[in-house]
Image (cartoon, rainbow, N blue to C red):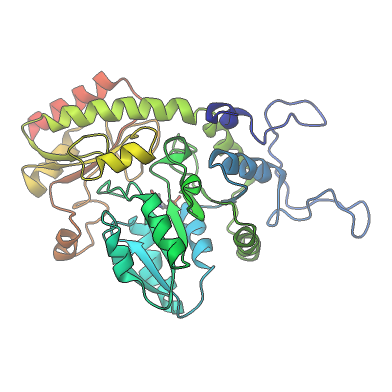
Length: 380
Ligand SMILES: *Cc1c(COP(=O)(O)O)cnc(C)c1O
């Protein structure tokens, strides 16, 4: 089956009692046994739930994977994967990692004795140079947040296999429509389903997908033991969103490309970071490993902090909001919003300059988004 067909059909069977084409929301905590030791495959919703199982099967199929698990948030999905490690283990992480993930690594997981090294993975030699005897895992995103950096997954896979390391990719920005890391040899794929997969700013959710049965069994045990599972209603809303994922990603990619070109030509914009532009450092790698380039981009305003704030206060259609990957275009200014609490020096060292703006391009008419950006840029 092709991706578009899987998105609509895979794992989704008509309800056996009524024929309902949309799987019901099994809003139940527990299940009645026929007798001791004989259930119908479900015993308690923290362990398993039919609505969640439908979503998990669908997510696995979209990634070309065997096993899927659905979590209460992207963060709890990341946390579950890190629980594969033990005190003394070392992780090599991409430097431009999602802010919430670096907070989890540095302020929570590291207090349990797991060590982290952050490297620029646009050059995979930096990964090799960071390997230590206790290194167990390579953690990365591609594209990254907010600098939209790309990492060559085939190259990472080679390094990992040669050194017996686990690989985990947070593929939230790309979605399985644009990129399927498991097909490139990556062990574990993580998503914040809050973003493109559900797609309409309607839930908080996360997912982990793998082909490795041993990893899956460990993660399933973590999921049931800790209990950060997604609710049946959230699973149902996510399934509804996924049905149009292919259509949405095509439109996000069309709009993304057009807006990147518009910004690139604008006199008040210093530079645009979008993997679809030939000026992007890893454009060729992105072209090779991704189907299209999606809707996420960052751009640098010439006027720094004041220009960034002015732009934020001048947009009308673009929503000033700290999320991404939904149908509405959303705009953020890291220096005054998501990263305002990070010391200026640290921010600059990471490339998060004062004039940096992140745009999550929605599926509105591209003319309307451009008109809004144009009038806002005129105020800057
Ligand atoms: C949003 C996001 C997360 C965290 O997911 P939540 O659903 O907000 O918990 C992790 N990684 C990336 C890349 C994200 O964009």
